[in-house]
Length: 235
Length: 235
Figure 1 (cartoon, each protein chain N blue to C red):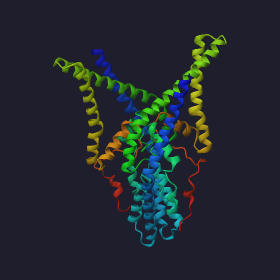
Figure 2: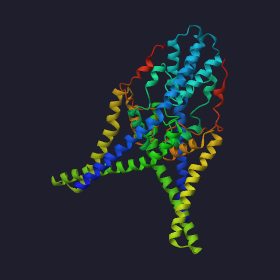
Figure 3: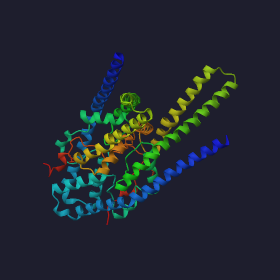
Figure 4: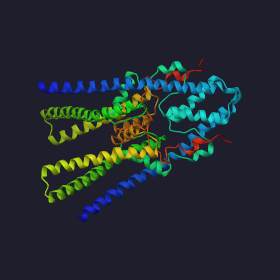
């Protein structure tokens, strides 16, 4: 029993350490490259603005094209150069990315763009995905232990075995649907401003590890866009 | 053996039919909504252009914000209203989407945006993902049969069992890496204009079902952007 606890502790700690290490490496590899790209987009926007008086339809179309490219690469070309400080690759965002990587959800709202980051991504995921499977297997084992205990408790209360089997199954099914689908959806209605069906859709797309990335929980919460969206202008 | 072949045939046909059916339903649900959204973006762009002479910095910033929102929703706000005919939801794109859904890759370059499409997505994936697992299980069985035959052939040639085991394992490992990582990467260099490491990265992100969607094979091929990107202006 004691060695089992040590084993469990080691698994949890090493899994957390692996994710944290990955987050730190990705941050180191990606953050500067991202800042450079952001600056380039903002310079492009400023050049467009300086050329104001002599703009042609073709200029606007080219501007729209450049912006589209930037957004598709995961940049938010809104605001001025000082706003480049807001990074997709600070530690918490980097950790979120690593989680979406090893779980194979892969939202894709942020991805490594440097060659070094992409190569590290392959190696990190090659070990991280099996590690996640082991970790989730352990979580499953804990849940089935809980299920067993519940069954034993009901048996001691004098319940029939068949009824116990049905009841524990029902208990886990209902709890699972409540905890992983219905409850999160209610929370997202408040924190993200999504409709209830959008919340269910997001929970399902995440749990199934499809991970489109069309809905992603915003760390800033409250369903509002980051404050730099709301700039009225720049110097 | 004969009933095995019928079973195999049924599996392949029903899997293909399921995907095709899904593609048709998604197209029906999503195409009109997408066209509406595209028109709205292009009207927004035209309004921006008509206001040319009196633009302020705030106007440009709002314009950039609107465009960013549109691109993040998967729209390409380039070109004029006649280009709204190019749809993410024609049959081939819809089929590609369905494939990325049931395999849980979930590139996310196109996602259902209507409530009906999102709800259908849940039900379709709930059956489609297990069906895909069954289908891939069958593919695996076929491969292991092939492996067995190769072993028997070598055994008849007088090779030792241990050596055969090693050789067949090596054969499948090397073939797998060649066919699923190295060869596609070479093809992507030509068709998509990616570097070799980008091709390996894309193949890995797809095979592991992470599916960020930062690199996606372009159906039009040749690494070029769709022709409507290249518009010099619009009427």
